[in-house]
Image (cartoon, rainbow, N blue to C red; front, side):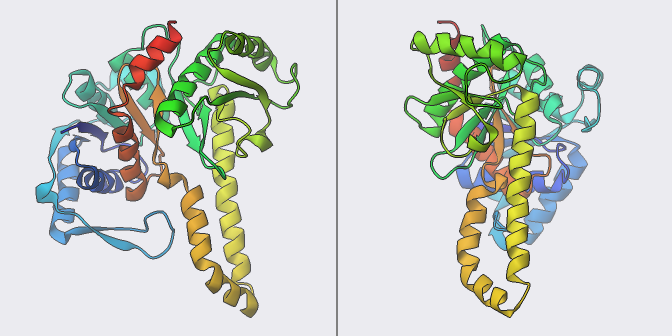
Length: 354
């Protein structure tokens, strides 16, 4: 049985939603868990779930909560005590060195020592990346790990890389992100010969800041070598219309694009909901359209994707949203389970070192 290390103290609603989502995932996907964090708090959550026999979740629809039956006695889990927590606002480098007994450092250590096959954390993105980088090491040839984010579209999801791991990048790093993103898109998303683009402010070659202008010829050269299928610059408005399957950028621009997309989707749903409640006709139409809106919400809701894979480290590290609910956490564990048997790291190493 595969085993997943869970940073039980990472996230805005930890440990409650983290423990709930992890147990839900273990029951649904048949994996074992190592829950890492303050033992008494984790045990209290497990006892509460065991006593109730269920957890409550809206399952990503933002509607009425459903009871999800959880049989704790059938789940293979252990608790590893870690007394410290790295907060969202803490300096990452200092915290990783100073707080060796933090939940994220201990969870990564469980993978490094071979007790678990993957680590999942909804805590500080910087701390999760740094702990994974120092604890697991880089794949040979990789300059800097990057976060691969899947964004919903009308067709197959588009992969955005880097989603926030590296604020400052070089052109060479973006070229590596393109090759790592391509492997991820082929093996995990299932796209054949993915089209790779670079996020810019215009379609024409020569548009963009200094980083984009330096990276463009490197990606073009990889295309001419037959290593990637490069389609040029991708504007922000084209991010979710399947003009490219993999979109490359630095982590600063990528994280902004990710948060704007997330915020816009949430705003549109709220605006539509408000309009349907504005008058009698709107209420009637809203009731008729409710099943359709629920399906749309489920397709666009980030909680359904759960977690983002950190590519380039020697192991499987999944970074979940800081506001993860139990449903989002369940899907973050699912994201780890999906790549367990894909051997993605050796394929990245082969691609990078060719």
